[in-house]
Picture 1 (cartoon, rainbow, N blue to C red):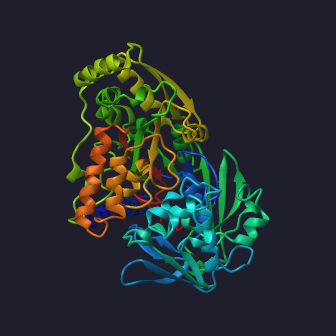
Picture 2 (picture 1 turned 180 degrees about the vertical axis):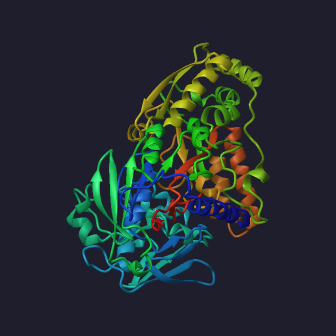
Length: 544
């Protein structure tokens, strides 16, 4: 953990250095002194925090709604809507004390009942939220039975002892629970307002309530979204340095965004790799390694059934030159994946990076790939191997990566791959409904523990909607998360390392790269908090 905080501190330092380097450049200055414009690479999908699954939506939700805690610049939990909390001696009961003066934007107080109602809706089988699993992940009592409809919603281990006291009861201790209380899925929901807007909830500004540092004041779909400082936020008196207005502008093309930055029309821009050399000497240039892992998701239930053949899957992963994709194609600070769990993300009981302990599990070996392909053809009874590769077009990287994957599979294996480019919304919908062959997707971890990744392939967890099933993986994760190893940090960590190896030996997915992000940030702008796990925060952004 110590090293991870050092990385965060270094990034913060880079931003501060940029703040003092305003000479010789007027790029990045917007017309309004107290407003900021931030580029979005992906469009907003939904403002319903119990339905959302993507980072863009989570960022906007966290601007205008609050959680029990927030994450500080070093990704540590700090008090937000809850002023304090108590943890039972055995670690299974958390009692949160909601502070006085916390109100929704309609003047109604935020109460413990809002958290009870929100958590029950998240775990409701009627909603079938893709994030329902996270309630079970932290071990909330009866979460699995409630989601399966075996128990009523009020059996979930959450209660309002009174209006200001929210109590969470767990089946077993959870060391990362506090940090997750800053994650939007666990935000409150006002029952009276929600039921009055049931048919249109979260579909417009007027169909939302706010209790965060900003309110949502302008919603132009596919274009831009503006948030205005909330004078009724409980900590408004200490947010005087924060800008009055933050606008998120959807620009999928980095060159246009960089030009807007130079012209002073935008303050924060994410660059494509081929623009790094052009802007690396700009005073506002910075680069960071994210916790996002991009992988090829395999639909084992596709109509052809070819992906059930392990030798074919081995051929596909061994024929990918990940270093070429990271260094020559993306050129943005991304690195070749060495496993499913990213680098500089999770640290074991002895402080060692997960990747350092687990090692590089993704070699490039085209000769071995050819041998596995020949075995696959014999087993499948065909020489004609072909499939479709689905990816999103909302940003430039997926297109570049998939074009190169197509070329690698053709050159190394002679396989013809048809590219299927879709918008992110379409891509998500197709993958959620298992209407694809192989799809390029990414995962941004919700908390700094390998479980955040590994649970994606845990098929006995509530809400699982994937196409991969492995009883041995399920059993070992059960042992680590809720079973005999859950209270033994060293044993639990060893289980996690073994689970990753099992998944990759079985080619349950094909990791490709870990995201690096080159950015231009107006040297006068500070206060952006990047989190390798959780949601990046623009809540306390300000301009000198």
